[in-house]
Image (cartoon, rainbow, N blue to C red; front, side, top):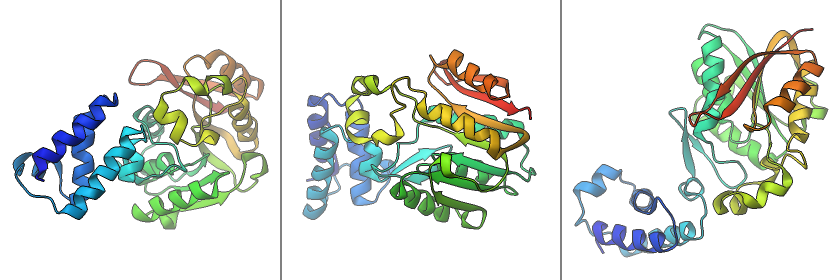
Length: 281
């Protein structure tokens, strides 16, 4: 079969399974299989694909048909103009989380010499995207999942940042190393009872540990804030991703722990996404 036929068949399978991005997903999966970019697909529609690669292509199409995230099937996801390796041990990096990176880079120049801590680093996308721009700074990523840390380490090596990063298998309650200028975190903040309301690709495939924030959604958020008090330098900054309906409660927890709120930042859909605060003592 040629490229045009494969894309048509793959698109039909995905469309009938209510995958909204059926055409582009089919193209990206075929690009992955034959190791060609989408421009090649568009300009070489009659190119005959070897049978072994056709089999591989439909295997991937059927995975997507079952709503497995495209990023896991491709094994990578773009975040802040960088490619990150991902699998189902880490959350799929999302554009909304780029808000944290943007806000850190807005506050600090590339000459800043910072010690940065990423709590719940996952794929490492937050920490590594920041360090790629702040080339005099150093970072530590911690995570409870050793499998997630292996992905973060791989991404650090991929982006030539091994000499400025370290990754620690640890819960934030038990982490006692260093005194940081900046802490960033995208903790789990979804209420346990709302997990089943998430889209199928998220609730079935992404790691629940990285999504579930307990009964109130704030179990881990609170832990991050309480521990940030001892891990941050005085006047250090905490950049925290939260749910849009959590701003009042999170603000209260921050102020109770001697933080001053510096900025509340909306995401691209104009929902509250990031709260920035500074440690007063």
